[in-house]
Image (tube, rainbow, N blue to C red; front, side, top):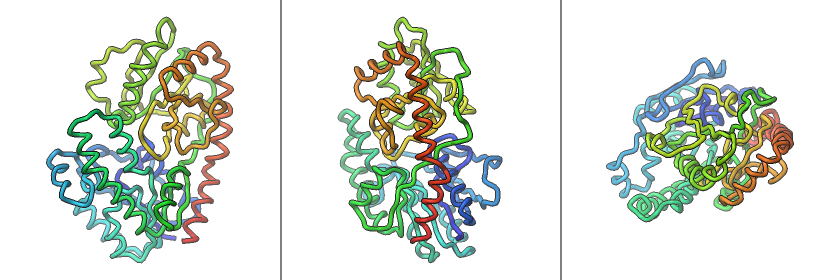
Length: 392
């Protein structure tokens, strides 16, 4: 089959969950014998691409799209049916590039990588007879609903509750009813979509990275790691919560360090009073960062889909301590191959236990590696993908 992947960010370099998921999808399609083209945006927030890590024999095309957020744009969206956070990805040059591709190539399948690309659905339908499949990385309106619940009263909460959320929920539900198929990224998301439409659908998660088997830690420190972009509110608020409610109590009197890595650190974080915390910022090698940690923490309370960093850390044999939301959509066994906690008291209790009984770290990590490498094998998931798209 000839397949076109349409993306709102470049799949290279693989520095976050979305780019990793897109990159893996391209590879999975290739391994099943399909010819793949990728059309991706280079936005103001994600302007980079890395040709060295592009898959060979894949046709990559890029279009610069600002997609910046502005107060005026948000205000104008009050009078439109499309939520502003989606509408900002509408771009005339991207549209014309898409039309050129669809008129120049007879595609069998068009894969929209996320609901934000739904604004190009009508163009795809008009200029191509290909099946159009939505790959839903998240249930987007649910992310914002959970985020709104974390906000105190104010203009932003009002705007989310009465303007953006109703728009986004209606937009998302209408889009999934138009597509020829849906690929959810987790069983939890799949269950939501199944309640809204009878369109063909399946759940295909992000595959585990089997290239790095973990091994022993490199550093002698008892390091606890947080990895995530801090311009994404669930990460920012989760880290702030962990520092205020957990770390300030746990770290006292212990030879431990919290290492925080990720993209787009806000200036505010450097004004916080931090003890035994290293702010590493953006790092070159996420795998090297993970391997140096005794524990990987995922203190997020909003979001949807699945956290790729949880899969990555577990596949490398690391003990992951997460909230229930942080591990949502991933097949895990609490207390066996992951540790889940949602209150400060639970987090403190688990960290204290791991500090005093460090042999548990390896036991949990070993079970995590075994689980993830069998459940999220790239070959198994590629086969499942093949069966789904051939049946459309």
